[in-house]
Length: 425
Length: 164
Image 1: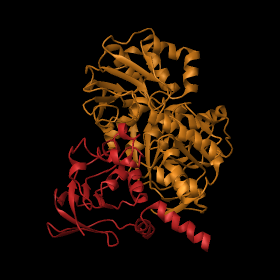
Image 2 (image 1 turned 180 degrees about the vertical axis):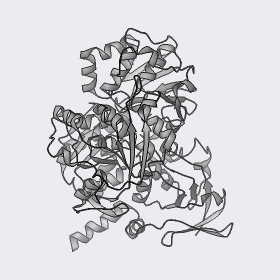
Image 3 (image 1 turned 30 degrees about the horizontal axis):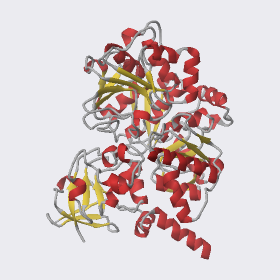
C-alpha cells in the first residue's frame, strides 16, 4: 500500500520508511515560523528558563503582523521585544511589517514541497498549498521546538476533498471553503490532514490554493495539503525557491484515505456566512439585501494580490455606497506594490476605500481598528466568531473578495456576478 | 478531590476563551474575561478545582495558548469535552491543564461534582453516581502532565542530559 502526501512527508521528517495513521512519532522540524504575538514575547522567557538557544536560527522565520501598527505603549513594547529577539537570537529571516506571515512566508521563498513545518498561528496550514506539511501550534510548544528542533505528532488520517469541474465566474476559493465549512462543520476535519484535489483545485492560481489550505483550520483539520504541480513550480521559481524533487510530493495511487468527499465546483454559487460562524454559509441570495455598515477587504484569505484583483474587477469605475465604510488592508507590502503598479489598488481606492497597514488588522481584533457596537460588516476574512473583530454586539458576515466588493457598492450584501462581464475569471 | 462542573455547549472558540483585545496585557487580567461572552459571571464564580465541561470542538480557532492558560490561571482542574480543537488540546497539555475526551458529557449538569482520574481515563460524577469513560492519554503525555507541562518536563530532560 502506498502513502498519502501527509504520510510521506511525516515519514521523511520522522526518519522512517513509512508511517501509519494513529502512530505517534517525533519529527525533525524543517522550519518554524513565529510572529509578534505568539513569538518572542512568549518564547524568549521559556528559552531563558531552559537556558538554551534556538536550535537552528536559519530554520526560523520571524514576521511582525499582529501588533502592526503599534498604536500604544504595550504594542510598541511587544514590537521592541520582537526586534530584540531577532538580533539576540540571530534570526536573519526577520520580516518586519512586510505583511501577514502566511503570505510573506511563501512569497519570500521559505516554503517548499515536502517540508515539515510548524507555525505559531492557527492558519499555518496555508503552507500545505505548496505540498508542505505545516500546522499551527501554541507558544509553549513553539518554545519546545525552538529549543529542540523536534515535535511529536500523531500521524493523521487523510481526508480527501475533491472538487470536480470548474468554478464559474465570480466564484472563488473562499466560496469553496465557506461551503465546506457549512457542509462538513467546523470540526469536519477532526484534526486530521485534509488533501484538496480535483480539476477545480488544479485550475486555481497559487494564492487561491493558499486560501483553501489556510481555511483547513476552519474545518478543524491539522493540515490542508495540495499536491505540487506546474502552478506550484512557477510560483516557487518566481519566489526564488528550489523546485528540485517537486514531483516526489504526491499521494500514491491507492494510498488509504479515511474519507473522500466530492463536490462539483461548477454548481457552486457565491457563498456568504452569517454571524457568528463560517459554518453558517449559504448561497449569497439567502443574505442578499442585508444592509452593511462596514466592508472589510483584508487578511491572509481575503487581501492577497489575487483577492485584491477580484475586488478590483467588481469595483473598477464604481463607488462604494455612501452609507458604507470600505476598508482595505492588503495582505503583504509586496502584493500591495504590485497591485499599485498594475492599477488594481487604484480601482479599490477610487471606489472610496480607506487603506490600512499590511497586517492582520481587524481580522485579529488585537488593535485599535475594530468594529463598534452593533456594527454590521461583511468581510473577506476567514473567521467571524462573536466578538473576534470588535464589539460582541457587532455582526460579521463572510464572503469572497468579489462578494464583499459588490456589497460595498450596494451598501447591502450583494451577488457579485452581475458586476462581472466577460468570460471566466 | 472533586470540583464543580461548569457546563458549556459546542464550538466554544478561542476568541471567547481569550478575547483578542486583552491579549496585550497580563494573563491574570485576560483571565477575568475568559468565557464572559457566553457566561458573564464565569471568572467571578469559578473556584480552584472546578471543571469545565463542554460539547464538541472546545477551543476551536486560534493558536493563542492564553485560551488554555486563562483556564489554568482561574484554577480549572480539567476540561472534559466530546472533542477539542486540535491546537487547544495540545496547548492545554503543554501548559499542564488536563483535557479529557469524553463522549457522554451531556449527562453532566452544571454544579455536579466531578472527580477526574487521568491515569485511569475516567470522569466520576459524584452527584449522579455515574462513572463516564474517557479516552486515556498516552503515557508520555501523562508524564508531561505529571511534571506540570512541557517546560518543566523539558527542564527535567535537559537536567538529566547534563548529569547523564
